[in-house]
Image (tube, rainbow, N blue to C red; front, side):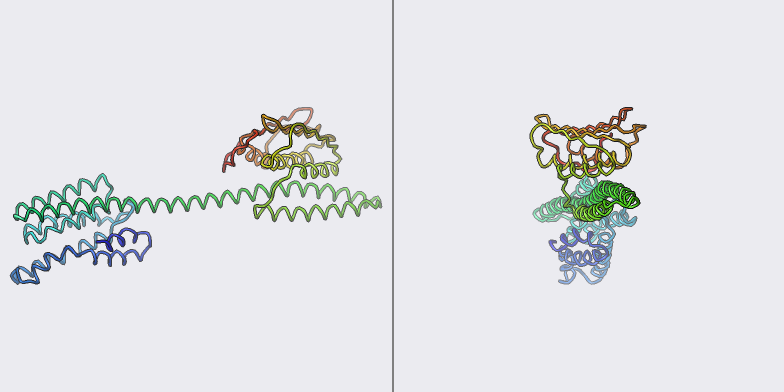
Length: 387
C-alpha cells in the first residue's frame, strides 16, 4: 500500500499525468485481493462458482479504479460519478463476503481508503464506522476467525485514519503553493508600485528643473549673455543625473541623502527665482530617517517650483527625543488643495514609518509638516495615510 499512498496522494498535483500514476498506484495497492484470488487458483472453489467470483472480482477492481480516478481534491470540482461509484463500491464490499465467503472480508479496506481520501473528515469518519460495521457483521455471519476479524477491523481503522491525515496534508500543500503564488504576485505588484512611485518623484523634480533652466537659457541666449552656455551645461548635467537616478530606482538601489536633496532643492528653487532658507536643530538624523526626509524635501521643493509661484521658501528640520519634524513652507499663491500622486506617495512612505503628513493651504502660502517617530516602523506594503 505504500506505493499506492504516495501515488494517490501527490498525483493530483501534477495535472493529466496524475491519472496514469494513480492507475499504477492502484494496481500495486491491490495486494489485499490475494486472498480471494488464492482461493480461486488453489481449487478450493468449484469452477462454476469460481467463474462468478472472477467476474465479481473484475467488477470490484474496475469500480474501485474508476472511483479513485474520478476523485478530486476540491469537492466543488468532484466528478458527478464519484458518489454513485462510492455507493456501488460499498455495496460490493458488503455483499461479496456474504456471497463468496470470509476471504472477501478485505474489500472494506479499499473502500475505507477511498472514503478517507475523497471525503471531508466529518463525512469520512462515519463512513469508516460503516466499514468497520460491515467487517464485523459479515465476519460474524460467515463465522470468520476472531483474530482475522480483529486484524481486518484494525486495518480499516488505521488505514482510514492514516489516509485522512494524508488527504489533509495534501490539501495543506496545495494551499501553501497557492499562498506562495499569491505572495509572489503581491510582491511583483509592490515592486511595480515602488518603481512607479520612484519614477514619478525622480522625474517630476528633474524635469521641472530642466524646464526652468531651459527657459532661463533661452532668455539669456536671446539677450546674448554668456551665461546661456553655463545654463545649458547645467541642463545636461541634470539630465544625466536623472538618467542615473532612474536606473538606480528601477534596480532598487536608489538611496535618498537629505543633505544632497537640500542642495538639489536649493539649485531648483534658485533657478525658479525662489530664495531658500534652511534651519536645522537637534542631533544628526539617522540613516533610516535621512532617506525618508530626503524624499520629503524633494517632493516639497518640486511642488514649490511647479505650483506655488513663490519668492521665498523655508525648510525647518528638528530632530530630538520625540523624533523628526520637517516643515517646508513658501509664500506662494495658495488655493484649493487637491493632493496629487506625489504627495499621496509621500504620505504612504511616511505612514509606513509610523509618521504623519499635514498640509496647510492658507492665504499666506503653502506648508507641509511631516513628523516621524525616532524609531520608524518597518515599511508596511500598501498602507496609505490620508493627507
